[in-house]
Amino acid sequence: MLTISDLKVGTKFIFNDNPCVIIASEHSKQGRAGAVLRCKLKNLLNGATVEHTFAGAEKVEEANLETKKAQFLYRDGNQFFFMDSISFEQFELPKAQIGHLADFLKDGEEVDLLYFDGTPINIQLPIKMKFKITYTEPGFKGNTATNVLKPATIETGAEIKVPIFVKEGDEVIVDTRTGEYVERA
Image (cartoon, rainbow, N blue to C red; front, top):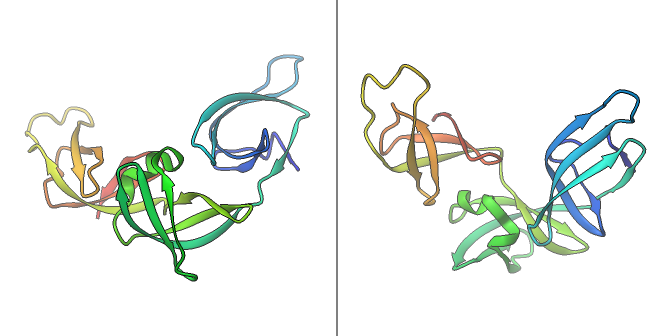
């Protein structure tokens, strides 16, 4: 069982009989009142997000999730197709279930697949991944008084913000949890 002090961003646990992950949290202690934890939870089965406040004495059950390697094959509309690297079994997950991680899937990319009760429910990508910039406007000198960012499209079609010195054809490293530019590769 997990207490509220164990609950941090990325922790997976059972909430309302569904596996969930914490995507944002804030601890709060006011005066004589007990500590509380305000969380934003993502349901790993259907991708829905919910906000919940845990009281100081509440305990939750840790999710028993299994992780296996899989390869991303292709997307067809809102369906994403994967193949288990060991059994070669193919299956699909809807975009609603994968969420924003769908923006960072490249054909042939190896991912970690999360299983709950023997069924694949979601994926995990490496925290930092390398992508090629396919389109961005040229940067202009003189716009450097502050940390200026411009929109850029990466090879998967997702749009991210990059510094003005990044050009088309450059490779950049992106944090897949937030979708933010980290550095040039």
